[in-house]
Amino acid sequence: MRSFVSAAATVLAVLLAAVAVPAVWLDRNIVQEQGFVELAAPLGRDPGFQQQLAAAAVATIDTSAVPGVLSDLIQPVLEDAASALTALPEYPDAWEETLRRSHRLSFASPAADDGGSAPASSLTLDVAPLVSLGAGEIARTTGLPLDPPDQTLLNVGQPEHREWTERLTTYAPAGYLLAGGSAIALLLALVAANRRWTVVAGAGAGALLLAAAWTLASGIASAAAVSADSGNEVANMFRDELVAASAADFRAWTMAAAAGGGALLLLALVAGFATRRRGRASR
Image 1: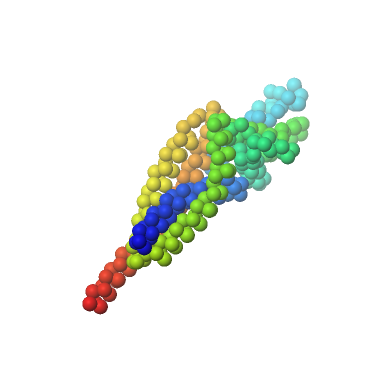
Image 2: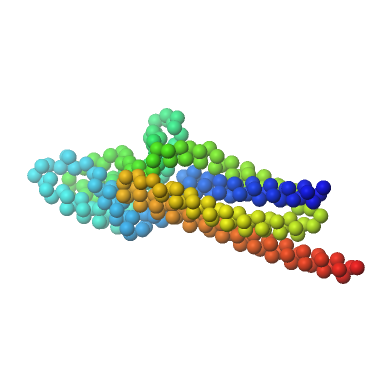
């Protein structure tokens, strides 16, 4: 009976961990604003993405207030501003604020009515801070009267992706409870086991299997995330780079699980060998 309870608890611990670890990762790195900013911030340092993003942001600047006699001169000014935007010392802060605004739009409650920005109908990138930075630089160097908008939105996904963010916001935090349940189940398995090294071996083998399963699932999820065209080249690039960064970050978790599983399995084999050796010596 104790062996059955121990085996069942070990299997339960592995199954709970299978869901808990991805849920915790999603909550920490996607649902939580600070985690999302830390994950996506390095994208703003990619030269190719920087330049396309800056060009897209500057292209949205309203130049209708520029006198007609200067209208032919404004385009070269805009192009120069786009090239120089990423070199400005304020650029990193503007990019971080872009990420924070975008996260709040994409993960805001649909029923939000606190006077802030309304939630977007799809995953959205708000590049208004970059537009404001570019407009300020143009106004400073040329004296042209430019009034940047409060919002400049680029759709990064389709409307159905908005439903994904709502589900993540609801269910991802449950990963911590599942992780706690997994730990309790594993502790129960150890207490009930006749030979505890078998539980350690089962946990190690389970961790190795989970690492392989997570790697496969991550590849499938990444392919699904980049399959839909947003219709905007910059938004597509941001989506692709974010998916790649997410996959790389989660890969570190799977590698840690695989390393931990391998260590547990090796420890269990050593403990089992030592136990059998002591048993033979005592006869």
